Length: 114
Image 1 (cartoon, rainbow, N blue to C red):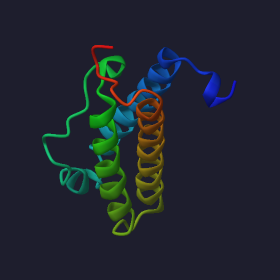
Image 2: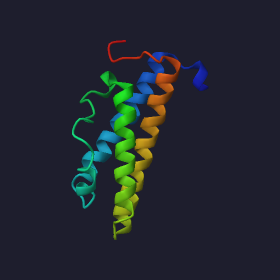
Image 3: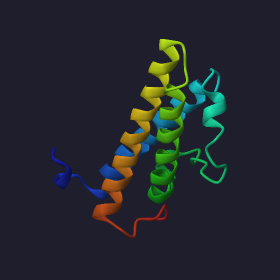
């Protein structure tokens, strides 16, 4: 199925899946030496508890912040395991960002209430 064939609901579910994956990776990374770098993310960019009701605009902003913090952290880690985790988190953030952009590009006025 190509992106053009996906319904708004399909795109919202894809975005929610990526957001849920990003949240899980963030929770896992918060218990590692990556935590201080993730603490740099502004508190106003808190991801919703239920990703299906997330705001795609907030997802975009948060994903960019997480990707930036994770990439900076990767450059400061000594353990390959933590570098890999930081890069995995950055990639997950970019997937969430791309999914939110896709959702917004087809329906620019998309809000959580739709």
